[in-house]
Image (cartoon, rainbow, N blue to C red):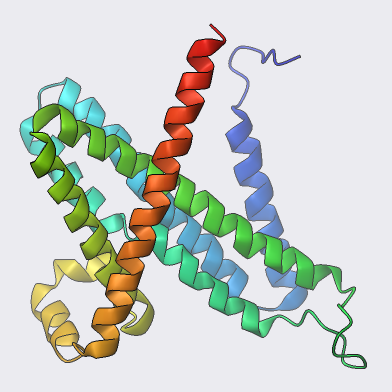
Length: 228
């Protein structure tokens, strides 16, 4: 039943192709560019997992420089995963109620497909991002004493929370960090009570998401061992 022919594409390839097709179809039908924006954000949110994969390969080769470089790139691009949560604001441009009766839901199929497209993007991005963070965290635990590893994890939460604010409100991207003078100029003029509160809220959200993901992963591992 679960047999897959050798050299056959992995199911994730089909799922990715289907998601891209749905996103393009929504854009063509609804003319809402948000569906292309969400598709791009999903790609960015999956980059951290790809970077972690290559980082582990370089670590196995004992290439300290490349391992460290990929680790820094991971830290830069990781916030793109929790940033996807803020893409739910794009739902405000989609109507879910009929014009005639405010309390009656619309039967416009494309509106509901848009909801599922954005919801799936958030799920995919968060799952991929939290998996990459889980790998990084456990590498910390293997190489550092526990208090330092947990402090490093906390710093990742805080920096990611700040990055979500910077990305959503200042419209800066991960690659803007490669232009430090411009980047610092932009953020220093926007430090206020709201930016701090929003960043801490986002950091707490990342922490909660990671805790739940870790519990689910450990529970799945225990169940798997019980059925061996």
